[in-house]
Amino acid sequence: DRKVFTLDIGSLAARIRIQPEDNIYINQSVRFDSSQSTATTGKIRSYEWTLTDENGEALPLDSKESKSSFVYEFKEPGRYYADLTLTDEAGHTGVAERSSFQVKSKSPVAVFEYAIPQKNQPNTVHFNGANSYDPDGDQEFLDYQWSITPESKDGENWEVLQGTEINGLISEANPIIKFKKVQDYTVKLKVSDKRTVGTENEEFGETTQTIT
Image 1 (cartoon, one colour):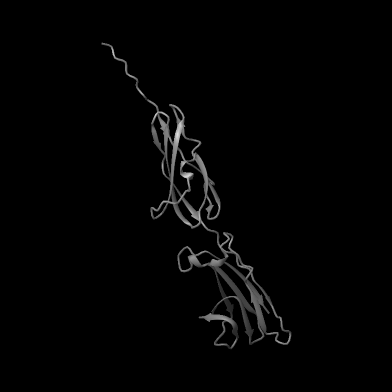
Image 2: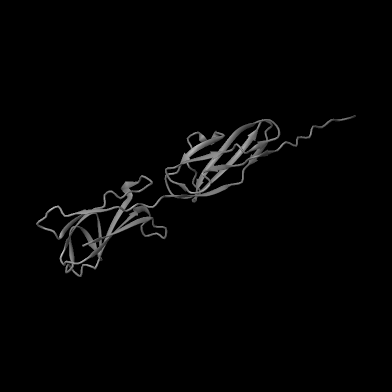
């Protein structure tokens, strides 16, 4: 007897496209797209996305995992991975090559002003670093650190009236400094993201002014 067999040679190629392709930052809209995927037999029936962090923990996608494309905002910097599995109408599955990408946060921007509010105390200067900002929008994580050159020398050159001084560094957004000697002082403000302080990837911004 003659028998007829149907040979199914259909294929399904899953492909991941991420936009932007590089310079991805937290709190930024990142698009994950499967439009470059192809199916030779029928249409793509289902999509299964997963996003995981560098510890292998899956991120909640809130039903986006079954979409052909979706937008996601990352809240923490680090390395992440995207995986995609497709199934077509004929039951074929296709697994995309894993995409690995780095999510970064932007460094804070240091800004400060100063004023002498009491004219009868011209050597008492009020500094204001409150206009410094984090482009990522995380203002609550800012750490302020001031340094003055020449150094205090145990209060001989200057002393802190408002703020905490440890080893010549002043921790305070708006310190008040009383200068003791008439000379030029170089004042530097360093603003850091608290979450990165003490790490090799510390994110910070600096600005310097000369006080005469």
